[in-house]
Length: 326
Image 1 (cartoon, rainbow, N blue to C red):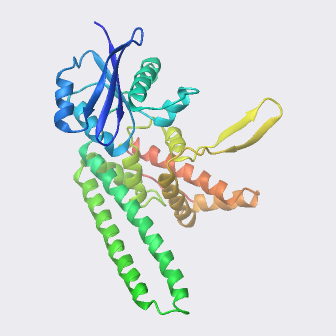
Image 2: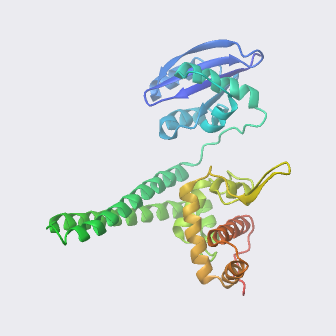
């Protein structure tokens, strides 16, 4: 039976697809379908689902419907990192959606041996991710309003803008309450699932790991199924240092990579700061490294790495976390 690979370029209103023969990369079919449930289902019903493999770029919520329907149909499919795809193509001139669909299919055929089929997280986890994304947006808005409030209080000394200051204070209070409601909703979702609740209870016993850090880690790792080990998760967070050297003339210091989850790294840094204050062992480690001349952020990064190791350790075993003396 001929094996086919379907590359799909996802956009807000439409899906450009290109079907290639796995043997010679010849185009079997290409076209456009609307990005809605009815059109996607009609298109899938006309395909031999046992014969095809589907691949698409990660496009966030634009591709959420397609991912869900493919999972419902039990189709094998891949969700490719757009940057990874771009870097693999070498020098390219021009860009259109049909060409992108072809490139996605061609890339998938050539790299299928190392790609991992996408597994849709549970509905509860998808809800938690949506609530967490909303919380992060609200927190940013609160920070912006507080900064604006400080500036306006200084400006109020020269011109009368008391009404504006009162309005911004009301906005801060309103959004702060919204953040609290979102956090309560995420906690309820965690408590509604036996597996998520078990992971949450284990990792929140680690000194420095609070509710938000725990929920963020659970969501990012699909309850610790997405990453094989702590090192891979640290790479995703941007905590793992890598060597930089070439030959005998170039030898830079070990440093983390710029490709990372910024919000996750920030969350773990805050957790590390708390752990330094309340965990005797980590506090001693932090102070010793500073005395050795290490940079403060470098040591904080190391502490965050230690927290990641502890999180994965307690999740993968039945024993609870034990706080050790310095």
